[in-house]
Length: 173
Length: 186
Image (tube, rainbow over the protein chains, first blue to last red):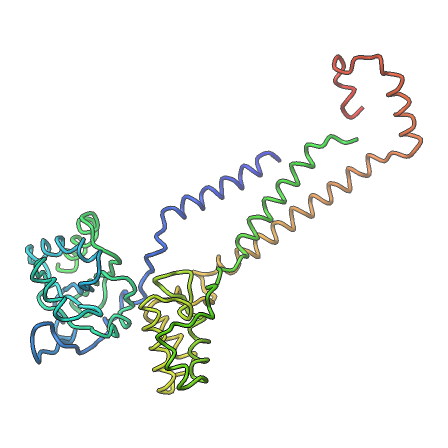
């Protein structure tokens, strides 16, 4: 019996360590999930005098992808966004976060533009309202305007197939 | 003398428990470079030092989400600068510490607080170390009680020791290895 106690403690420790390995401490759960997406009014990239507010998208499932031309991981996920745009499953809106218009436009010309439109958040204040802390981030917003899901970091083929596409299909039913 | 092994084992176990509990009790190291303010803020500091003190006080309670072991006061990340500006703006427009912390939690969750509230979700964080401490004390108490009992059964006075020494001297020609029971509890 006595010999089993340290073994038991060791076992518990191993369980905790294994759980620890599978956690992603960089991905902080968003308190926005299930809540109405914060509202804002911001100009649209390359569209003079056009102002966008999220309420325009009510009734549709849409993606809000936070991106910037200075963001290296955005470059990695960009081909996937282009592919997703081709599928025409959902409107993809870009939130051009703390970027400069000329650089952003150059990026879209070079890499392709998957966005229905890009919203200019030059000061990053809308980013703060959405709890953005690491670009890229992607929000899935449902018909009622609620945040259904937040993807932190670049979208990967795996997360696209296993998480995003099934979720979009489910919400679009 | 008593054989050493069980005692040694108990010591190891207590040491092990103490190690675990001290790991859990250890505070996450708040940023070491708290006092290094960002250069960009120097003009603000000069214009209203009292406000800056307040900004820093609140920023020190908030975790930077980009560099997770730094406070928003200590981090040089872009987001930390933006959030410090946000704290400043809100203070200037009449915000209180509570309202600002609430504002941050609404956006980034409890994770942003260095001093998270006690909830079902954080109960292990708050109670875990205490539970480990109590467990350690329980093991220590058992250990001490056991020690007391063994001491009761093994009382040697000087006469016993003298006798033992005498026996040892007499048995010198005998080969100990051929009779291992001699070395144990006899």
